[in-house]
Image (cartoon, rainbow, N blue to C red; front, side):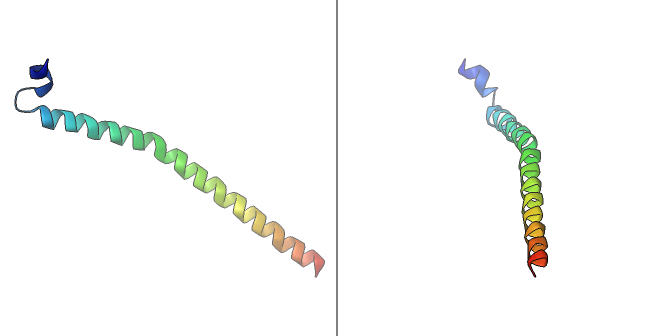
Length: 60
């Protein structure tokens, strides 16, 4: 079993490559979600800011 995991002398390289690939796939899956959340938060803040400006203009 250990020989199969060690893959000769290349086990460290192979398993670290698999690990790096898994991290990259996870990031590739999560990054658009973070970006969307940030975009929606910015749109919401801008809408609130614009609404507050309109109320100030109406009250003035």
